[in-house]
Amino acid sequence: MQVSVICTVLNEGDAIRPLLDSLIDQTRQADEIVIVDGGSTDHTVEVLTEYMSWLPIKLETAEGANISEGRNVAIGYAQGEIIAATDAGVVLSPVWVEELARPIEEGSAKVTAGWFESDPYTDFEVVMGATVLPNLSEIDPETFLPSSRSIAFLKSEWAAIGGYPEWLDYCEDLIFDINLKDQVEAFAFAPYAVAWFRPRGSIRSFYKQYYLYARGDGKANLWAKRHLIRYLTYLVAVPIIGRMIWRARWYGWILAAFGVVAYCYRPATRLWPLTRGWSPPGQVRAFALIPIIRLVGDVAKMIGYPVGLWWRYQQKDRDNEPPA
Image 1 (cartoon, one colour):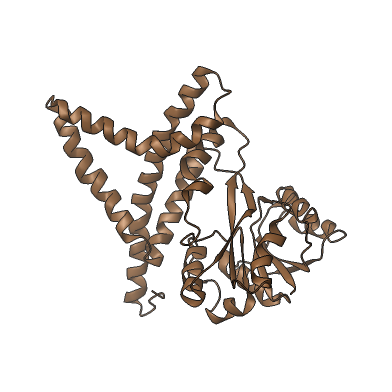
Image 2 (tube, one colour; image 1 turned 180 degrees about the vertical axis):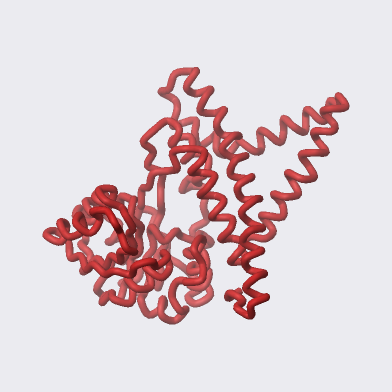
């Protein structure tokens, strides 16, 4: 079966070179690589043209397209029966194409979920990756919903569910995964089909990322219970514990200590092996960042989610309700 790798780009410039280099180094070469440019104004197109000497790149343009529209355009142009999707800004493991395609070619699955891992460049990014990204051992392959930076599926299944949701600008790959799950039931899991990507390098960029993710959750009506629990925690439980501490109740301090440990335990266990060679002051700074990052992420979600819900409500008022 032919494998088409698809990707969307916008003003990537030289940043796309590591992805293209990793596609050159694959143990199994893609039959074609369809890249849709959303209207780059830098030298992205020149870089892609340069790599056409080494890779079977087909470059298409969809100016102004969001990521869902770009992916759908790319898949529409693709000739392969198997579509392997990824993103600009990642580096793929050498067996990425091979591992994603194998279960589908063997007939054991129609969708293969790949894996993703942090590729930090700075100490802050090490902490960020450990705080926000799960380890492989923490996920259940049967329920895991893959990012579209590392997934493969039959083109016929993409067509059957109507493609990526073009009405959604963030969390589009989760809706796509959920629709695929409803269609094919089970995904194969390929833990060695890894896409490495760089975590956010500042609190500001992280806040924006999680605000947009949460806004996408609201638009798509995703994870309502999770968001409700977060609001109850911050708006009910935290003020109650704070009142206990203010009144010098010893059990308030115990509850607060338990809450902090529960809040930071999982990220701390991920971070510890990554910082064993660091100086003691560096380790202290690293672990002190965990609650800050988590708090910023939670605030961003609590602000972004109702914005997305309001957008969804407005679509209903306009008789333009998005799909459930």
